[in-house]
Image (cartoon, rainbow, N blue to C red; front, side):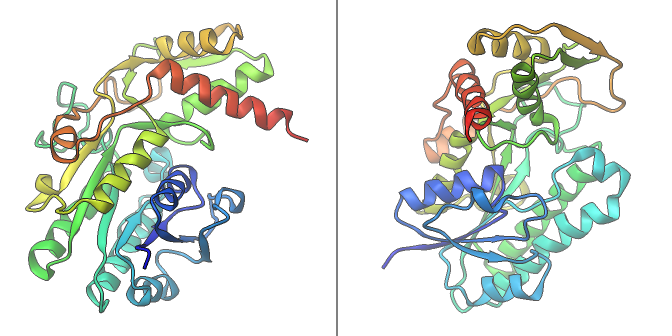
Length: 319
């Protein structure tokens, strides 16, 4: 009998790639998504789809009664700026939504492993020197980062007190096909579309701010690895958490130059005022996940950016 996995947010950018990867491993995949930002077209044909909010009784019942081996929780409010503008809305989805599912796991006859998508950028803040190691101090600068850290603590609590198997993957800046131009990593999608439109690339500040860009298919592979691991990470907060990235800092100007080169498209760069509160540097250490799961990124930035640009170009060419 095939293993069963629930992917919340599975109609979204990252979640749909995780669903693809789990299906390829022989899982029966159920997707829970309210389509507030996800797209029905992203749902794999072989997956079962349930349209519901992660905060809903329907979502909790699905987790409690679904007989899942793993719940891969990707659904979230992902925009840092929106979290600043409306922290209550952010917490409602990102904290209360996760708690709704964790309570359902606690009440399930067959308790699934709970894999939580956290952040490897916003959770550490700008007070440490990259590459960020899991044990670094946490000082988030946004309600989004605070919410992700809070759920990590909750997951550790549910593990210690209720025996729930859980693990945390702290993502660096994920990019790739199906990406929407939201959040900081959305710069790749934005640049691709502007190159296709023949428009200038807008760079905020001096363009020297760095991020760790990791391809979405590599992120999906990390989720499959932890969902199928014989023994997941355990213990208190950082014992359950592993960074998912490349360990390489790439500044925005280098990103723009690389995209122009691999796409064969030229575009001028327009500078705009720096955005208040934007992190100056961000990259994560991946030594722990390499040691624990044997995972490491497979796609170079050149290859990943070329694949991403070709995806957006093909969408433009489609009838």
